[in-house]
Image (tube, rainbow, N blue to C red; front, side, top):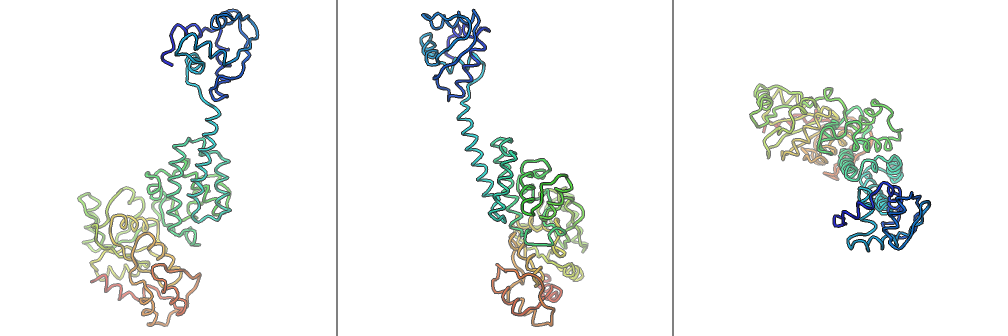
Length: 424
């Protein structure tokens, strides 16, 4: 296009031909940029004269003029070897031509690819009917196609990771999860999108997550921020950062920053420390213990209380039942840092669900095998098991032994055995 003679472009760029080139451009862009077909344009005397000059032997008069595009292309090529209709039209009208058919096909292909990627990302914990409803709802809304391909791909990637985290944490299997969140919204967003604000209201990845939650819980799309908050909490994601805490004993983070020093001083003083999500967010990406070390974790506060009274040397984190988002954040951070987390909980079905969640996050069982249960149950009597039976993937025999024995053995019953490990 740069080689088209300036004299030719100046000749064809007259104001009297502006409408003519606009019509030619529209036809080319709708016809895959091919110089075929005919256009009819109203020309004044100057426009007709200039077009006659281009065609040389052809006498064009003012008024409606029919021009064959292939003939126009040939006339331009005769005027200059470098000229052709598409390049000249782009130069005269001021911008490159767009093959609109190809662009539509590309958008259709891109949309189909996005929807396929979204359906694959959503398949976890969705039934086929739910997956179809979710993907179709996103497609009809146009939120991905309006955002552009790059933003859409990034949002789907964030959604896939975030949705996968919820699935692995078994939040959709736990009827009590709404009052016992296992994620803070900022923590989940950081894991999924790389920023704590990735799931803020209005962010594309957040809109996908909220739509998916609405389908999963068979609810309408949220009409307010309060509705959105309630959906997150139904999935075990806390939207506030101060109400729940992680109960810790003896954590000694390495490092010279003020917070790490403070935590070591509290450990030296024999103080239990409660950590909120707000504090964890303020501290940032910290290491709670020396990589390669072992940190124990338990379900019940009575175990941590007994550990504190006995001044055990081993560090201990307590979920306090189902656990608050802060407790889960500490556990996941420990595991990501290469620290071995050994977990013990109640031998009842709710306790097995919590243990499954902790172990699926990367922790190791701590006296949570079939033999450990049988030995503890033999010291009974204990009350019967209640609730839905849960599988125990870390020890397939455990679930069967629990069914046969039908005894709910809580951590308090084996506190002396656990203290022995912590003291050792």
